[in-house]
Image (cartoon, rainbow, N blue to C red; front, side, top):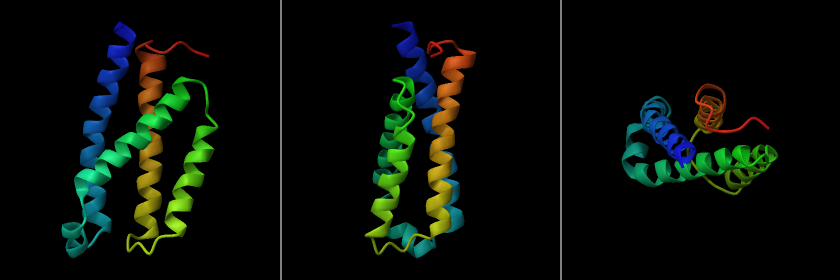
Length: 117
């Protein structure tokens, strides 16, 4: 129970940091008129859900999910006439993956909440 609470606290703290990072990325890459038309809350919730899925995949020992994640992201980008730049899309995805790695490594190596596999 203590390990689950530890992982949950670390995940929530990193998600709060992610809000700041993605707000900054939105400011850098998305024009003001486009920012007003986007639902930031929905985008943040989808991002948190993606990061949770990736974290659980690593936690459960399925690193292949990173490949599936890439395929999902490419698939959703291909069929969409989205005005979001490719740079923003790439940077956002890389930041998400790095945040998942940070949560996983903090929990596994520094806090010993996750047993080494």
